[in-house]
Length: 307
Image (cartoon, rainbow, N blue to C red; front, side, top):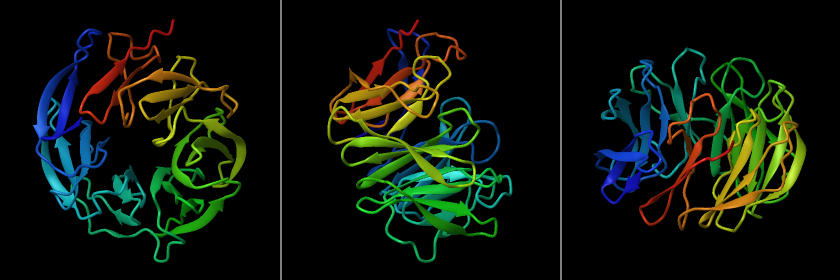
């Protein structure tokens, strides 16, 4: 959780009444959104966090007890969104950013000097997502550019990427997410638009996408990127649409389309929503609780009561 003191780790208790205890705080300022990944291959989640006070993205290795030690700083733009993937197919996680930079991992929590993802990008990117969209074993990228297009960056397995666009993006894509929405084994894409709505594209496993559904509405303006997760335990991905103190939930049909969303309340200025089992339910139950940090420094926990 981002606080005025830095990045605070909340430790789960498994109890509905008090789902978290406050753990350690990493003192940082000017923070972006953190992500977790096992960058040194020890089976313990690590943290990557952009911070102005670091002058880039800090890599903090997890110890397994809820504490972290700083391993390195990647000189990326702290405000850029970051993703991880094995982009050079060496078995080590690398880091890419929406600022058109890629840092190859050394496998120990340190990274090589960043290089451009594209020598001549078609435009500035606002958001990127990583995944193998053409099933060749290498991580690819999808990028969104407000006022332009959503782009597919296919890994050419030679240290570079080839660029194409996703057609039929109606207006101003602001973010993109990847998941297999129809169970065919291929990654599909959900583009967040500034309308605000979400647009679904089905992937065919070759790196191209076709429109499946558009105009899935967010509950309000000031939307955040669409998130994907199974909310009702039916094994089908659903959409989370956070915006302005509320979260829209659009349940999936399993065919790459979604039912009209219903809305649940969250704190003012809701941030990125986390899906976690917090009240003692089995990890295999598939009914995660929702954790929504807000702009007031608080966290709203919504317990999943799906039967």
